[in-house]
Length: 185
Image 1 (tube, rainbow, N blue to C red):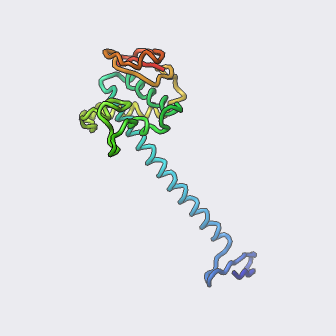
Image 2: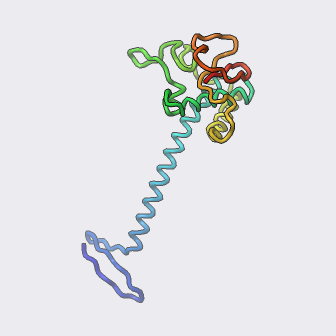
Image 3: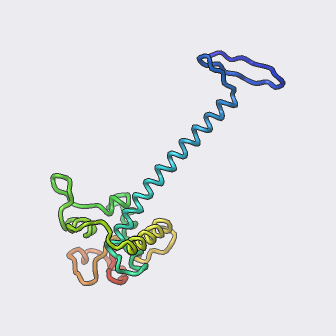
């Protein structure tokens, strides 16, 4: 690499690399442009990952509590997030939602999932678009304010419909009943 000083009114450093001449300012501008492009790519990746997690949260709220009010839907969202931050569960929303016992082919075993809708044998595609949009809105709120707003489930990591009596309920502390669900930690 040859370095030459050129005087033309002001002192400027020129770098000649493989026959191409660059000023230091041009190199710095290229580095800054590359850094900005890398930041943009990282932001796009983070947005894609956020959208995936949001979709999982919204599907869980939709399938578990679409007939509940905002409060009931938020409670399901809090349980999902409480699991994400509990060392006994996976550390992403999607991994929590899709946690299941699987067969030798890696497919979830019917009725052996953390959330019953995932492996109940029915389609997971939302049929009621208005209710799904409501679940999506509530999912965004939970993801934005988790850890800031008061957890209405008091740290619950489990719940069940009020009309059922699962075997595991005696092993947890009941925290609350919110609409159609009873919550435990």
